[in-house]
Length: 247
Image 1 (tube, rainbow, N blue to C red):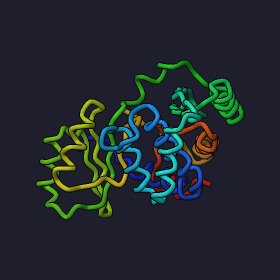
Image 2 (image 1 turned 180 degrees about the vertical axis):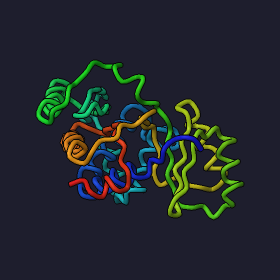
Image 3 (image 1 turned 60 degrees about the vertical axis):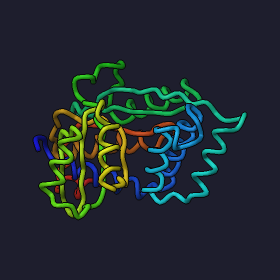
Image 4 (image 1 turned 90 degrees about the vertical axis):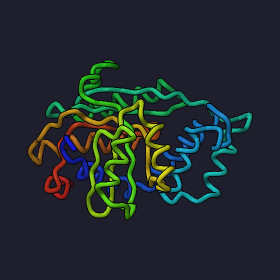
């Protein structure tokens, strides 16, 4: 379907997460706690919690850790998180969108602003990047063994806007409002996504030479290292060649 391939960006993000396994676990467990506290601690009655548990299992987080996170969120002393977002630009005009979960808003905004300033970026106002990113549902899973043509028709029936198939894996994108429909479609086909969620997908990307791209990725990495940051999105075009050269 239409659109540039996002596999290089996905691979680079997963590679970075693998290097910071503890940070990835913390992010996924925090999402479980937020979902359990906001709704019921029962995944059958709480779609957000069910999805958070699914993603945690996909990252091989032990079942005991998941159960403890749910129990902690259900206790009287459970922390309350808010989920602010921040928007800005990295060197070279690359747009950066940051999603956070925090119990201390002042600390979070100070930390995010410090990273943008330190690495040559500029923190903007909320809504300034509304024209850069689309919020979409993204599902990733291994090849199902289903005939690709038939599978594509099934995905289109669930309002998929883009399907990518490479190296025995699928990425399926749906509009924000069709996320639930795609979940139901995959369940009806007996397919369990290894990861699924709402992401900010860049409408257009920016190409930079290696030195400038390295500056951008240093800012991205520093943001992702912040304890309160859950996700960082950008519109830097990461080709396979460029991703392999980034330090």
